[in-house]
Length: 412
Image 1 (cartoon, rainbow, N blue to C red):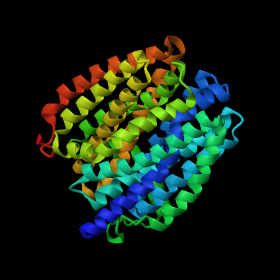
Image 2 (cartoon, rainbow, N blue to C red):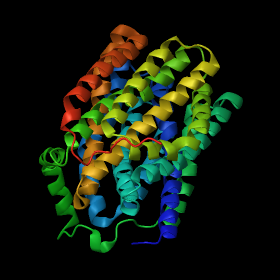
Image 3 (cartoon, rainbow, N blue to C red):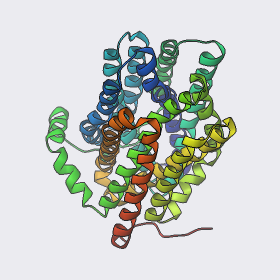
Image 4 (cartoon, rainbow, N blue to C red):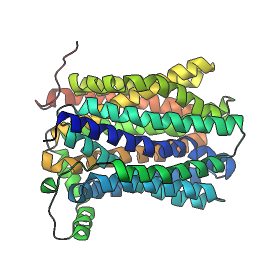
């Protein structure tokens, strides 16, 4: 076991890697729909297919790449994720039709599938007993990346009147340089003696692909992971709806593209100071109560966005939204890691990613037609009403079946 000093150093360096990766991912997330709709004049049906594909592919990537992190270690997967983000932004920079964005989206799907399961497993490798607080610190560092990218986007788009493709190119260039920093500084989290031994890595990955559904089914039965994965579906559905449609709503209200980044910037500047404490809450409050409350609060916030007009009110709503989402995801990661056996931790977190992607894919497929026929406001109200009802039903049906390992309420 490494010393506390070395553990702390490893977590902070992992946070730096998250900062550098997040710097790129935030730009893609904030502007891909607007870029398709307004710059490339893409039909809503095509936009829906592209956004759905991003998450659909992760259904097949997440578990095998989570398995790969158990075989070769966490660092290679983290670096793989970073550089595929960079390639994706380069494709956005040179795009002259939606076909380029389609390919870019495939790279984003692969990168997210490599980066996030490996990151959560990495944190759990170093701090299994304080996963929530450590994860909060990781997300805190990731927020610095979000702040920097939002600041650059706001300046380039609002003050200098640059085009979105120029923004993509600048961020991709920074991504290349920052990836080299991660190569030099990031330590490995999984010692060789703890790695899964296989006769052939390619054979193991191929086997993981073919047995993925069975693996997920088996993992879902372990230590109450059914409850964790079910809530993850609802959380991912709602979070992805917010990520996809809020930028469009903001522009529809008369704000500029740069204002989208400004709202994110202000909310992140506030939330960043509370990330470790929000993570710590998930270590101390019963999982089912925490996740139910955060999902319902998220839905209420989405409804309030539809009627908010004033700049300050929208900033406050973004603060609530981002704080709620990050707390919910930390709770999910914490509980999945806690309930999974050590030898299956990487795979279990990959399965968590599978359910995340399934929820996001369902979100796109369901809400795309609603956007087409009921309008943007209809998307927000449909999501909020249905997710609240299903969340409450899930809470009532599963809380009595929670395993003894679930966190106990221990408020200060």
